[in-house]
Image (cartoon, rainbow, N blue to C red):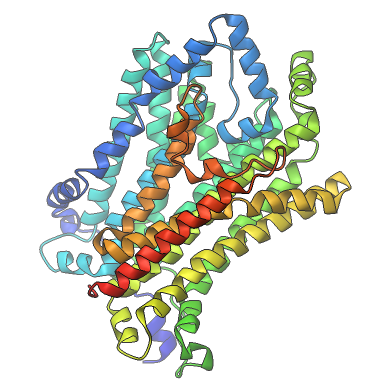
Length: 550
């Protein structure tokens, strides 16, 4: 057998049998038991605060219809807020109250992606799926149990969201529309993750594919909503499932028919996942692994060369993805204020906010926070390579030689830190070049975007530092690093609610990055974050050096 033949994915051509779903119920009970803590937490967090926090916070601040109208005009005049949350479609309490809750569609997508990959591709990668498959379990049982678990959780989130909103003096039909749209978003990205799990032989790449789809669809939605402003819906919005969720327009027409788009896409993608699963072997993926060379080159003579060989593909993919986001940002930011409409109310709000230049600076500052979150996701993925190498026993082979534990751990950690810095720098460079060319001031705009990118790094590095801490002290819980990042995103979004206490907002590392361009640069919070990062890294390295290999 040649190397190329051995690297090709195994293709299975077998018809559907009635026994293919055998054991689905048993696996579903197993998954419910394994997720008995995490699953209820993200169901509660993504549903119950909607009425008690979002609606009530708006009603306490804006007491009259005139106040709500002014608030809506302010939102429509802010490209940063349009990009982050989308527009408000009328001046009712319900529409204004659930405006920022639109980000829950992203959060439920993150939760479903992580859950689906964990119970599918991650199980195959670790070999547990093979042990389960050796029993009387059908080939589709694992995927079916996973989708039933996640789809059921999404429906429960939608139901609880409806109940929470319906108790807040807003129309029940709008509450139902929002709850169903939220459930639909979760189902769509659960199906996206199910497809991604069939494409790669590794959970890390599968998560990367699914999150890349989420990032692209979020970007399309953001561009569409910024370009539309107060006008008709832009075509970019309709290219994104996240845009569909907002186009249901709860409390502003309740377009229930849009939910059919979510349902259709979720069903089609789930069907694709089953088809791909039926045509591949256990442990294989549709993306074939390239055969390696017969002998290692000089670059593999040390731990950093090995780390480069293992990390380079992921680094390239994330850098390209974030760079494309930078290109999109640079192409739309200049003159964005002119696209928000010509009504006198919006013009007055833009003038009070500092004019078009201030709007552009606000959009750049906001956008690079989310680019920083993307870079943090890459950094966590790169740092988790340590955990993957240890659990697969490859680390034990490397460490039996003359390589010290600290040197080996540092080799992968360097890619988490320097790789995320490279991705941020490339994104800032590309955004600045396009922005500067459109504005006729390349040096000035490039310095703004590069500054906005680089100030995010101390916050970005907090997450691989926390990952290393878990790896060194609590190796069984290393993958909780994804939960740390998800919690930080949730705090960032929930902290934007009017009246949120500052101590709660301070829990998010990105809250401490200077909001440049548009405000004065302050080095103190960055220095403090860097010190915290260094302490976490040192504690993680010391813990790893002293503990036994798993």
